[in-house]
View 1 (cartoon, rainbow, N blue to C red):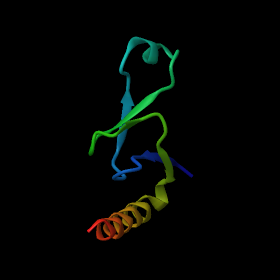
View 2 (view 1 turned 90 degrees about the vertical axis):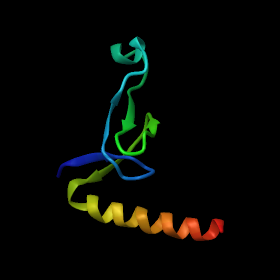
View 3 (view 1 turned 60 degrees about the vertical axis):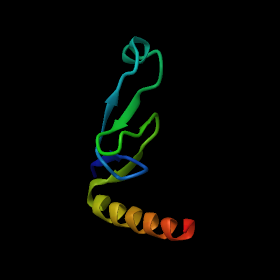
Length: 71
């Protein structure tokens, strides 16, 4: 089963982000950056490819629920 890393904020695609030479050389942990919202972090969710769409729907539902509480 293939897993993909997704952004914890928007479930967008991510790419490796090297802010400095030490990260690129492996002295510091790898950082990832979301292509959709720009979130940068060291830890991203790994979701099975078969459950990716289900995860995105769940995240959207959670975001809508959270925005209602803020009002």
